Length: 378
Image (tube, rainbow, N blue to C red; front, side, top):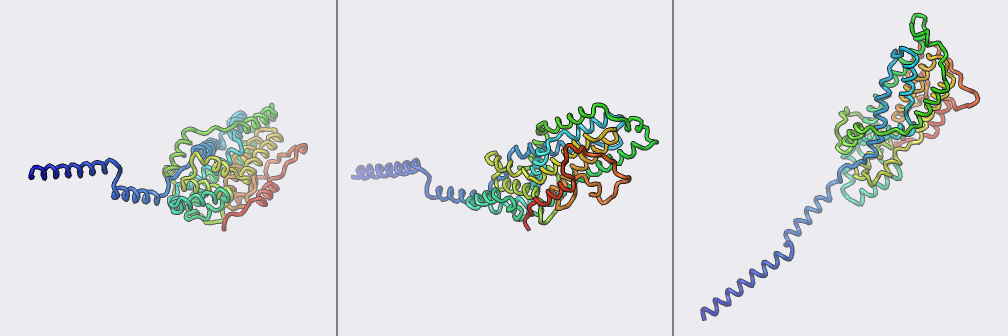
């Protein structure tokens, strides 16, 4: 009897072990499932990482690289007539629309260097539904991004950083324009060739037009650094700044691109949205008008000192003006010598525009720009 009971006990134990093993093989326990559920909920409460596509970095690199090259044009560095032509070729070698788009793309990357703005946007991206609603709202109305928490900190970074470029270019412009007067002085040894009519004037004008039509390529080094800075939020070494509304349309679009990036909605899948946001009519108009005025100036210019004036007024000064107009609420006139508040040292050089191809005056251009500029959020 004892043997029979022992045999039945062993069989029951073996059955229990078999059931336990079978349950382990069939899947996780309730405790494990609950732990997995809690982990998934915790992960869902975290915002997606910042994501901005390479296209934005490429566009920004075009702006940054060209501005750095343009800043190498220095006054007083014209030992002969050819050196002026070299500077003109360097300064005119940009596509106006690409440069405008690059400025806005650069502004977006600058905005992402603001931890306050990134955190302010990301607090709304925890809930997937709310995140999608915000993305749709920004795409439909870029000005919405300017109302998000921290926008003033990001806008301050954009205005201060790009403003430094404008200040540097304006200082170069003023010195170059002054050199156009200095070189005419009888005590300046360069005068002997500076007052001589330029040979092959039509060729140099066509050269400027050709260079303006060439597609600008991204700088690989700049693009890599800007891409890393955009997605990490560090690397540009910018000092904090703050600027309240209203904002220019260009700054609004930079903030919109940055907001999409902070929401994790600016990656490769969103290139259509980010590229559309880099297009801003007023900024493009300013750059296009500057180019048109440069061509008109070169068409009318005869001696080399007038080419120096064209270089100072419609390359370096107009670049400073357009970048300032893109980031500051202002009434600056493209090519206006009074924009710095100081009158020119002498009467401006007279350059008559050809009557066969009339174009809007700088004042008219600015009036049209101001009349078509939408106001930022208030």
